[in-house]
Image (cartoon, rainbow, N blue to C red; front, side, top):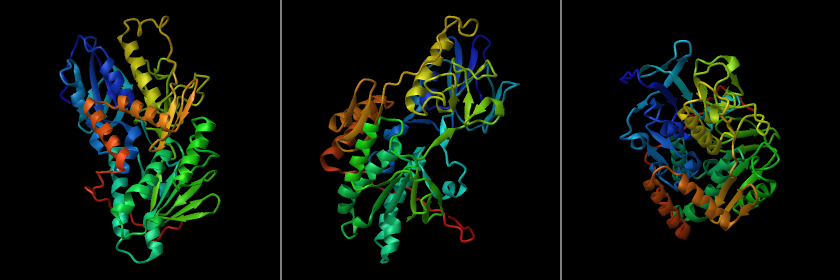
Length: 436
């Protein structure tokens, strides 16, 4: 990997440049450690706004920021673009597609991947939305479908192309459903005046009895009400059993005919090969209250991939969201910078997650926010949501671009990035397979 060797400084390798990995890598003292950050992309993605890329509200470069721009002119800080294949814990080495690397301390911040709960058919035919390329696939899919719908005469075929099923009623699913509904109401009629946009249907399917499980019942009800007004068909207590590329099969034996299923129903930790079964629970790496793996004193895990089961308030681990990840990254960096952390932990406080609140937006002037002592909804919640997301974006340029786009869209609903730059090729249904 062409990393200079150093005898004076301990080498800390951080795998993953998400919310957790970026925080810890930035805040580690470079006069005490040689820091090496590894990621399969050369940019950091602000995932909470992926749905806006998917619905042509923002370009990808407004929610992504160059890692090299973040670390430039920083001594003893190196970035390598690589895919980590495995870890050799005994030899303290990581193996990647561009070479191998020795570490003194390893911080695993690999985040999460889409969880299909073992259903191979859904994994094959549905569309995930965890990365920028996946969001761009969805954008191309939406626009290509409407172009295709113009060319067919068969009404049922038009409906298949113009029906969208979102599986998962968490913040991502709710925000995506709201954005699609606003496209249907305000944008698509002017773009496709010779197409009956009323044929477009948007379904939001949730396995539990309400939307936004991680938020209050009041916010869940408000989100339901807002989406319903926008014309979204919400099915609660609806478990999706299968999808064959054309038909969604549910537990209630109700079927939806569509070419478009967007899967936002769950995530799981992205585990690197090399850990034993005893190190993992629920597809996340077990850590103690210092975010140290339970069996290896020089390996740490933070963010979505970390499972801290000691916390009574979060018996199933912390929420797999940006807040805990960023807090864990800052906490671990501060511990590493403390000279007593590795020799004596008596005065080191355990990690305690501070929940500053949850929020979700449903559309213009429609959002819900849950804070510790109060809740917001409507326009005030929407402004709060915008402010929090703006300040959380990495880079001044990204904040300016996002704000400019939001201001323009607020006044005229104009989404200027409705371009099919990279056409998406749909997977074809196998005639040999049977579903249902």
